[in-house]
Image (cartoon, rainbow, N blue to C red; front, side):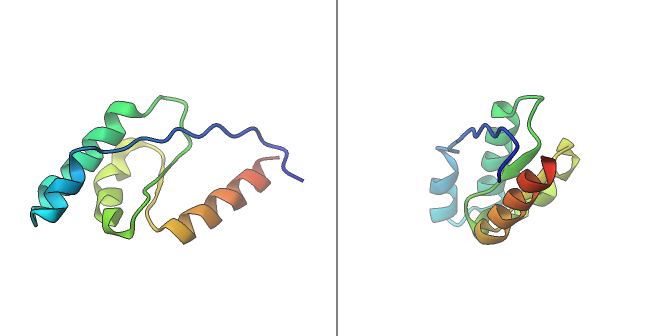
Length: 87
């Protein structure tokens, strides 16, 4: 039984995808990181990046002070495990 309260915040990096389409990988990752840093509250315990292409942003966000999960399947599995272990 789930014993932890979970609050999700969905944030979309609006400008990032165009950089990806244009082949500007550095700008793509920078846009993701800037969006996460601007939107994140001080009470977050994890960041889940929605696409595998976002994985390099995890390295940049490492110094942010929270766990960054970059693979959708593995990220959700880890999040579920953390929720169940929190209770």
